[in-house]
Length: 369
Ligand code: SF4
Image (spheres, rainbow, N blue to C red):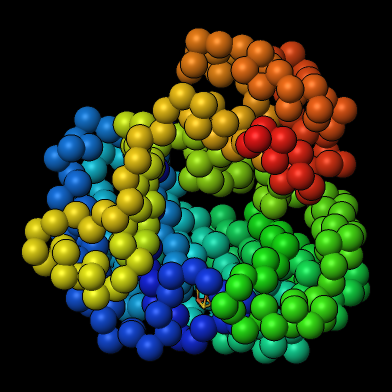
């Protein structure tokens, strides 16, 4: 079932590894920006009036940095302009340095029922080096406010000087705080970010070291009762992110706000990355789309295979056949042969063997050729 994504591009300061669309010095634009997001939803409402949406995901940036009234207005507008299921999953991303009781109560009052908290690491020195605005203690405070709620914590692997002991402390902090879901990502040093210099200087753990840290984290997380359902995502039973599962199942979604991307009616499209242009466009009554392409044929097939093989549930041969009318093993005969030793098949589903899931990129590259 389709999902709704709302992008909030404001942050207190820029993290050293960040290449997301976020503007640290433009918080004073939040009110005008959110008014444009509401307007964008209205502009899309008509064309999607027959659709029923199962999830709303408010990501960023740092959604929790803006006045909660603006954010709650976004949820209300989503409910007004679109048909949602009876119990939609509504998620807000939060930075532990920007939360308080009042904000969380406001989110809950409009139906937010899932929270995604960016911890990254339990080691304060590493948080400082990443340019994060919070400490491990702030995370604990945030988690205490979320007691009994369905919330996820993000952690990063591959930080400078990160040891297995650091990973263990992070997993223990998360598990002890009551999180129902964990996203464990490998740090990607993007060109143009401050951390890229550390990468060029050889100061970051290499691929093998990151793989070892990941494997260690995976074992600890599974011991704590989190089941891996996608390469970077772990959840207690029933707490998987419905919004993200929809992405990996190549489901449809509509994105609002600067840089938001969408996939609907066979087309992928993206909004402008420029905040001023976004606002100007909406105020002139236009959709701020800068990139719009139909995904057909081989590209669509590749997308379905690539996304499905990232997940533990894997690729359903029947779903593929139903979608494209062909057999996926026939369509991808050569790559399938080359990668067969890394794959397992159970009934209708084919998936990457658990021990190779972390290196799925190297396997999936064969399918892109
Ligand atoms: S909080 Fe997130 S979006 Fe904002 S600068 Fe840091 S990594 Fe980027």
